[in-house]
Structures are given as C-alpha cells and as structure tokens.
Length: 79
Image (spheres, rainbow, N blue to C red):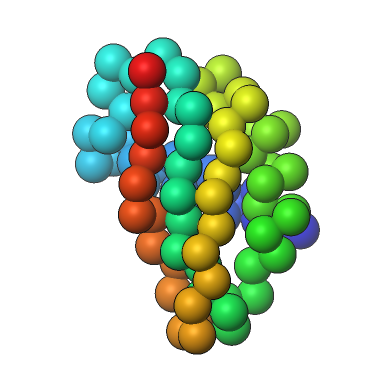
C-alpha cells in the first residue's frame, strides 16, 4: 500500500511550500489523480485518515480523475 507514502509526500510538499504555516486543522484537500497513476483513491483516503499528523485527522479528500498519470493538488481548505 504505497498510498501512505504518497499521502506523506503530499503533506511534505504542502509543508515545504509554506501552505501549512500556522495551520491547526485541514478540513479538506482536493486532488487531481491520473487514471493511470496507480493510486487507489480508497487507500489514499484511508492513509490520510490514519497518518500521524494531527492537522490531517478527519480530512476528507476529494478526488478528480483524469486520463493521465499525474497527481496534482488543486485546493486545500484549512482553519
């Protein structure tokens, strides 16, 4: 289940780019997942629910599928 490492990489990317500065809680995250990316959206949702980062507990990922192999973060809603 490599979706856990994908979820961790998404969090690291958000953090590295300053999107999580001062954020206490992430309510939702919108991901554009390529149809051929090899990512199972159910496992990725499970990964976000069980990752060891309190800011992401209870986050509800929203997935948009496309015909490529890309994964893009389109929107993140935070408190």
